[in-house]
Image (cartoon, each protein chain N blue to C red):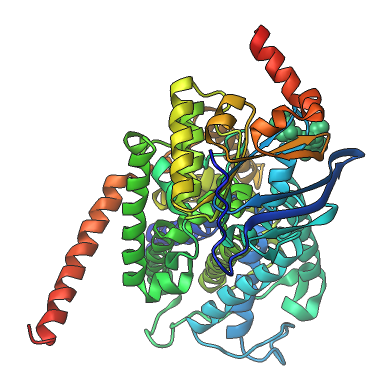
Length: 341
Length: 271
Ligand SMILES: Nc1ncnc2c1ncn2[C@@H]1O[C@H](COP(=O)(O)OP(=O)(O)OP(=O)(O)O)[C@@H](O)[C@H]1O
Ligand SMILES: [Mg+2]
């Protein structure tokens, strides 16, 4: 495979992966209004757990980590998502019951810094600052994949997973649950006065979002085979925020657009550009500045994003109703047939 | 309006009972020992000068604020310091003096949020009982559209709620509360800033709600409205219940006239 296709499929992978990450943050922030400035920590937890669960027992690998069960894909990925969700429950009980908006955001940033330091320094957990490496390539044995063919293969697998997760997420967002999330986003006091327990729903939203974060992180470590603290500097959270703000908070198509513009075109594409002679790493810095500038321009001129949240029209609900009724009519006639009419 | 308290056997005669409620804000005693009962199935007015603590009482009763001391009962159940969502699930709904619409949601969606215990609010049901979710949702949409027709908001159903006018928001708040099928409805100045024709309409809605068995407690400054639709009046001054009874009786009460009615009567005769 030529270097060109290698690059293309790497970009495709990151497009789909950030689509998943953006959907997870969107349900928390875009739908429920939780300013989760610790989002990247959940991505990291998913990555580490996915990696550590699929690695063999740590003895003799030269690394230190917990688990080491040799758990095959996709079970390790699922575990990564679930552990991220479990941590979200813990975090929610600590911070979500009392704090809101800006105070909540500050506490979450601090929490993510604390977690960063712990994982970076407590080596027995996930090998400290060195992070995990030599993580086995998923399904490589089954499909006889080589180092080259693995990249396009896994980009496609990630695309399929993203599609599945998109399906689940749009079901949630269209449901009464999604509507209650948005009610809490708009005014959690009113939602409470209407009988909705704001904490309970925020907890649910955190769990769902953290699962998406964890799976997105797990896919990253499976794709690259390694993951360490440089991959999740706390500032990375803001890249995911940039994705959802540029794309348009509150809808999934926007998430895909945001992932394409911010993550694929601005963050990863320039990484393939030749270095500016004499200034190693300069492109990366310019990159970060461009993302920051884009974020400001968007917030100033188009805060609703490229694809704004759409109004859920009653006609759409009525169409759903008609479809539902059609189905019910058939079941009703079936029922009648059975009862011998 | 005649005094027609006829408690059905077994059911408590009072929808709400408050004993010695107190609430202070950084030293300001907003509610300073309010004691009153709200008879079931009637329309009760909560009146008093600005700053008397009326809104604070509504906040306490709806669980949006916690009282410093005192007790409150909702249809016989002690709900002192319950969180607002639990009180709401017991059948108490409220509106807000300054409208608090769910701005990003459409008018229809504002109503659809209100029904309690929706099947589609559980992740499990969304994926494993989709038909039950859809059936219930369809019923709710139908009922919400009917309610919007009743309140004259049907044509605005697809507008984002933040785009409504002040008066329309007042209507939306009542419609949303009604959508939750409350037993007790607290209305905080439902007619403030509303034109006279709409005042009459809202008055009619409130009477209809009473006819359907809902207990209403409304904060209201307009005594003509109180006279016309309220069965019972609670006068609040400086956080205390000054008097309770029928408006006609209260007009004869010297304290009440001094504390509140005097101002209003004078204002309405001279202004
Ligand atoms: N959140 C709050 N923080 C501090 N003080 C408050 C708060 N809410 C109310 N107060 C104070 O409590 C007192 C009672 O206020 P409240 O809003 O209950 O009056 P009200 O009877 O509803 O008046 P109005 O007729 O003007 O609406 C006022 O002195 C007010 O300044
Ligand atoms: Mg008030």
